[in-house]
Length: 110
Image (tube, rainbow, N blue to C red; front, side, top):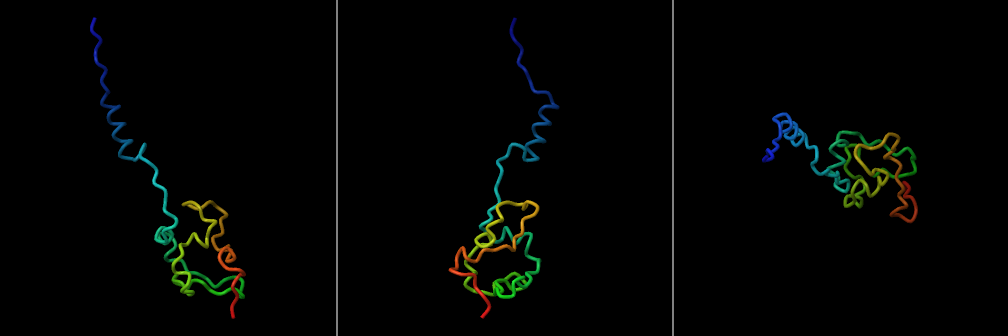
């Protein structure tokens, strides 16, 4: 007796194509958090309030641009290092920035 060839059913083929179309099995592409545009996809229209501590200088203008020109070369996560994934886990406060990661002391308003 000659064994018959097994064929995929039309339902199996349809399921396979649907999964491919939905991206199941495709490699996961991580968000590039070092690219400020990634952050601005969600945060571009958010106002940047004055620092809660009035002794600290304002780094961002309200529109998100930098008030301190020296910071323009850095990415968002250079200061907001607690942000490690998108979406951000609940309870993450992105405004908690440690200026002393780069500065000898926390800058103050002159």
